[in-house]
Length: 127
Image (cartoon, rainbow, N blue to C red; front, side, top):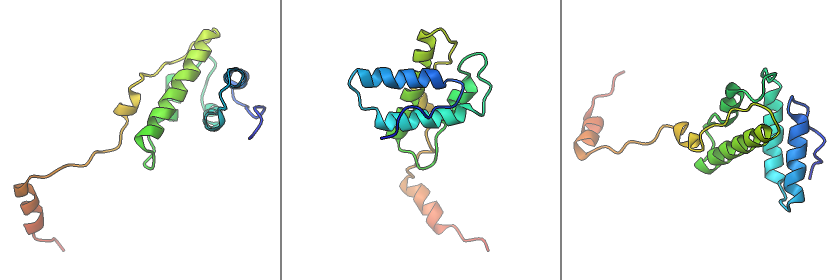
């Protein structure tokens, strides 16, 4: 397991303290530490002078094609926990909707009717 000394972004002190607090409560926070590092690295690309900006949060939770719904929910949960922690320590922080993972889902499949399938199968290929 990595030590929690490797945060370098504008919220480094807060992320270190957040991680230490969770571990003091008995949580292992191994996967969450990896996610916090990912968030920390991403924060280096944003102007965070006025707290946690919405564009950083939205970039962090932006759905990747290979993510499952549980991964998406996990990212939203991490982003919300960071925002709440920062807010509780006096920093302005954008708090995304807890259902944000539903709003950034991948395109769902479509079930065709029998007539719809027939139209697809009987269509002449264009060359």
